[in-house]
Structures are given as C-alpha cells and as structure tokens.
Image (cartoon, rainbow, N blue to C red; front, side, top):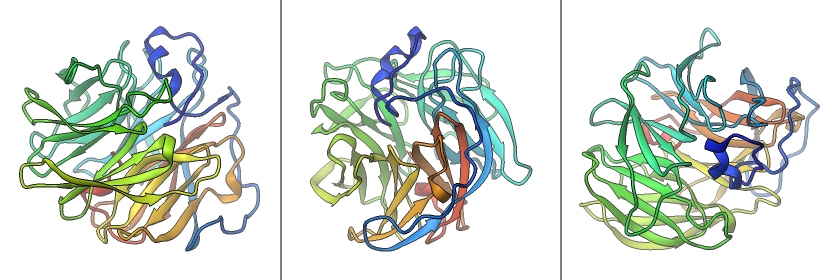
Length: 342
C-alpha cells in the first residue's frame, strides 16, 4: 500500500503514509468506461470483471482500502478494510456465489493490512500496521488475541503482509522507513508460538508484499519505493541463505504492492496507483497485465488477489474514491495456499 492522507481518526494516524495519494470521498459506481489497449510490458492484457462493491468511503477516515483476500476451508473469502473506523467492519466475509458479505470483526484499535489462516491452528491472523502487532481471531471472528507485540531487535514494526510456512511459522513484511523515505524495511520471522521473532533481512525499500514460492524454498518480497521484487532463498530452518533482486517492475506512476503465487509459480503483483496487477513467471518474464475494464473511474489501486484453491478463478481487491470492490479474472494456473495474497 502507498501514501494516503488520513483525516482525523487518531488510531489510523500511523497509516497516513500508506495507500493512495489524494483519496477523495466520491462513492459513485465505477462503471465500465470503454476498452483500453494492452499496457506497456510483454504479455497479454486480462480484463477483470466486477463482482460486487463491498465498502464505501468512510466519513471518519475519508477513504476505504480493501486488502488481504484469503479463502477459508468453506470457500468463503475474507478481506480486511484497512481504514475502517470503530463500529464498521474491519474484517469481512464474502460469499462469492451469493454475492453477499457479512461483518466478522471490528474494534477501536487496529489498522489491519493483511489476513491469513494459519495451517497450524486454523485461526485467522491479522497484521496491525498502526501498532506493529499480530492479532488472531477464531474463524467466526470471536476470541480476538494479541499473538505478538513489541519491538524486534530494538525497533517497532510497521507490519504489512503475512506468509505462513507449512509448519505455521509467520513471515512478515515490515515497512519501516516508508514515512522517512529510507530503506529500513525488514522481513521478520515469528515462531508459531509467538515467543521468538527474528529479523531475516533488512535495509529493504519499504517491504510490502511477501509470499512463499511453490516449494517453500524461498520468499518473494516486493519493495514498494524501488518497484522491485527480491527473492530470499531459505534453508531448512527458515533462515535466509541468499538474497537478490529478481524482478524490476516498470510501473510508471504505480508502485509494487502485495504478491500471490499460483501452482505454476507465477507471481501476481498488485499495483498501487493503478487498478491493475502485473503477472510474472518465476524467471522474471512479464506474462500478463490484469486490468479493470476501462480503468474504471474512481478506482486507483489493486492491492491483492486470492485464487480459488484448486481452481483458476481469481478475486482481487480494488479500491479508490469510488469505494472498495471485488473484481474477478481467470488466473494462469490453479490456486494453492500461496495464492492467497499475503
């Protein structure tokens, strides 16, 4: 997510450096505005279709920002609204077939930027950017718990996205330095019991998206302020053995956001500043660009995507002054656990 001015809600002051610049309060429907030609870069253009509107701009915060799409075991899609005030849904469950949504959780504290189900205990884990905490919920939204809080190696975290390994350990992107424009970003590993946190990589450029590759041999990391994707090779204990720049994203005014990976190892990279996603193979070749038809008016970023487990139907979260929406498209390969955007 990218810089966004927040109006007056104190609990969200910390995320004033995130999301979209100049977000207004227009809540009009972003209907199709005609077709466009394929964007710059190799590969084809995939036209996403609108599924439904989930949120409108909140009066208290001056915006809405959908993130963290992830499927539960029943096939329902969970998303978070980063800027929802107390009393408004901060976690939302969506029944795709019926095109209905239901509030799962709200509180007066968190600014949640990601949601992921743990393979270890089945709970839903949320990253709280405002407080540097990880919070977990029962799948029905009950029993909220603070899983992890506090400084890591002497510095408070600004958490963005989450990825789980097969054992249930958490890997998180820490966007430290975003507000100052400095490369203080980190990747942090938290053991599944929440007792130990380890910095795996640092001096990153506003660490944002994070996802394991297909074989859990490494992590794909997006660095928002440098528009690049880095790859961290991991050892058997989850430690980093090497790190390199893997992909340089030609985003124009847009910046790299969250990452999801399909069964063929392809990367789906959200673009902040443009309602689109860039798709790459694991060798860095640009395969496709997913576009909202006509670049619908009032939509300014596509943060994330989740692909149906075992299927190819993908659902991406798109937001802007027109509100928060779900769009769908056919992915290039089937969905796996790593296909739930971090």
